[in-house]
Length: 205
Image 1 (cartoon, rainbow, N blue to C red):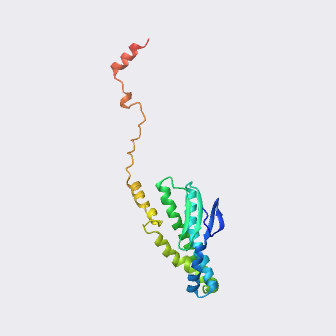
Image 2 (image 1 turned 60 degrees about the vertical axis):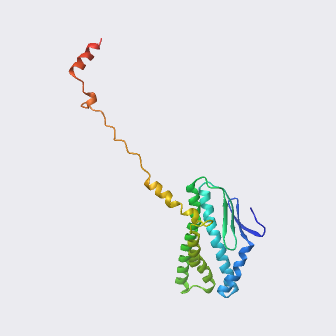
């Protein structure tokens, strides 16, 4: 559901991807941290991108589990992915981990870009420093915070994977049946006494 003051910047299938006006409140903080308006705008864009990457991670896993995604939104202090209720406990846990996995992927990409930048120029350009700060250390901080087992954080559902894995690991497997022996001429079931053979011959017409 689109809220007043939201700007739709794209779509995930039929679901709108939007940024709420409250996200603009991050600009003064980024400006103050970098000491320049261009740096503040780069920091703001990197922050909104981080929020949307996390929520799109949820959306991708939800879609992979056959769930409808209704919207992906970025606000000032958090993002939100609205999707159909999970049909199983496993799907619910997987969707919770989807946002964390997407953040971790962004973290690895940012590390690679930062390394490549230093190899080319010898130092990270001043304008890109806010981007790498948000995508690397701040990204990890938000990731670990999100994994706290406290509702409504993702960790409240994500850590449900541990008892699920434990139950599967300790579940008793049914004992395998012994292989069926192929009957041979000398098998006990094929051994016939002499009297039985005479009787069988006597029954023949």
